[in-house]
Every structure is written in C-alpha cells, then in structure tokens.
Amino acid sequence: MKKISCIIVTVILLMCTVAGCSKPEGTRKLSDIVSEKVQDIAVVNIISGNTGEIKSYKEADDIDKITAYMQNVMCTKSSPASASGWSYAFEITGTDGTSVKVIFAGTNSSIDKEKYALQYSDLNEFIAGL
Image (cartoon, rainbow, N blue to C red; front, side, top):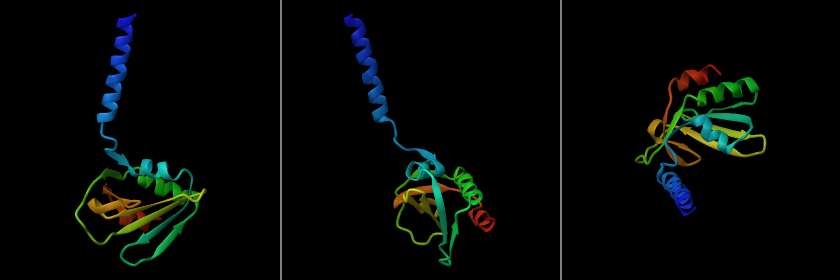
C-alpha cells in the first residue's frame, strides 16, 4: 500500500512540476486570445493608423470574415523596443460590453496594451475587401 501511495504522490508531483515549468504562452492564434476576452462579438471597429478613419462592422457576415482572418494571425508575446506608428487597430466589443483592442504593427503590436509580435499577411487587402 505504501508503494502505491509513493507512486501516486510521485506522479502528481511530476505533473505539477511539468505544468509549472512549461511556458504559459507560446505562439497562439489571435482568434483564441480574443475569444478569451470577448465571448460573443457584437461590433468590430477598424481604425486606420494612417487616416484615423473608423469603420464599424456589426453584420454577422462581416464579423465572421474578421474572425476567420484572426484565425490566421499568429501572436507571440514579446518585449520590443519602443516604436511609433501602426497600420490598423481592431476594437472588438462583445454583446456584454467587454472589449479588446488589437493594434497591428508587426513585431511591435499589442493586444490590450500587452506587447506581441503578430504574424499576418494581406491586412490592407483584407480590410479593403470588407
């Protein structure tokens, strides 16, 4: 009985050690990060960093297209040097009022003021097609 108890305790300790030492966040999809903060998207405001123009998207088809695009955006936590300028920002608001802001600036991007390196393609073409 003691042997089984020792084995069980050892396995539990090993699992806790592995879980504690593992990296909490590696590269993740933007859609996964956003869905943790906003459950049901009601509106997406896309702001141009060049012109300041804001376009709001509330239709389900548009939100589905934006969500599909976010599934292809890969995010890695980073600590970039200071930078200025960004191409676009997405302000995503849920039906319950929760929101998240994503600033697209390549390796100097941010999600709710947390720094990320975002890997994305064809952002300008995607937005032009909405």
